[in-house]
Image (cartoon, rainbow, N blue to C red; front, side, top):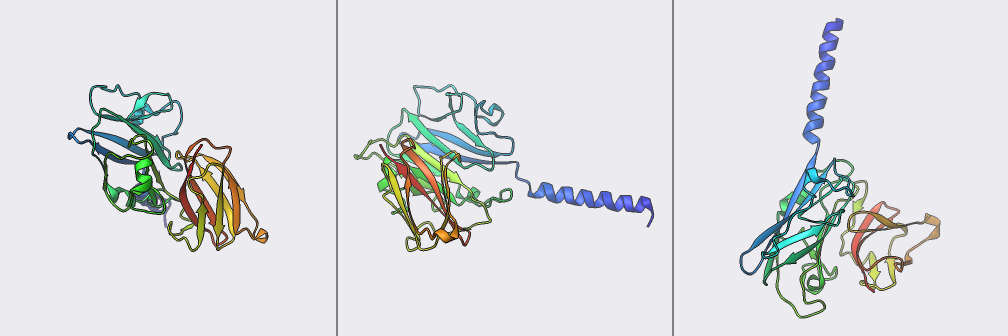
Length: 276
């Protein structure tokens, strides 16, 4: 084989590899959450995973996270950005979970919240698979939801939900908390409602949460809604940890994601609520 022919073959293989690499790349995932109030007024929040996003200040203006001037006489939904401004877009790198707190003004009940569930099944860069955690949480969905024991609304099951007026706790649908997450595919997901294997209580909690598992616990992790790791506890197999009291006293009030990993490399994830 001549050097010229070898060079052509190498160039051809590099071209094929480049095409395959590009076909599997995922430069951006964009997802909308639409809101409509009782008068028919509409507004939208956008969620973005992007390889260029950094998830902190200064905000990614190129991805839409910059300040949005709100019309205070009309129905508007909005979130806060890292600069302390109002915006309608949140953008995070692929390694983070998407978390946001949505506020609203000038709305009338009932509200309808809708989204495209098919986008949760898109393929993401290694080591992350498709979305396997998407929840809506507030005082209303704590009691009225499609998950019962989780006290939140599972967006993976439906593509819209009604948010009417209600008469308990805050009696207000806002702030409305959204969490969308993908998990490392080196773990095998455990059914979130498999209470025969793992139990967490009390949830909500003011100080501590008890974790009881039928399998030995290897690691416990607690994350913010934006994906920042706050607590990490690792155990050896000889410690035989099947029950553990986790202190949350150092955390602010709010919603957190907890991961519990056993020595079979299975992961259980659930939302926990810290109260004052």
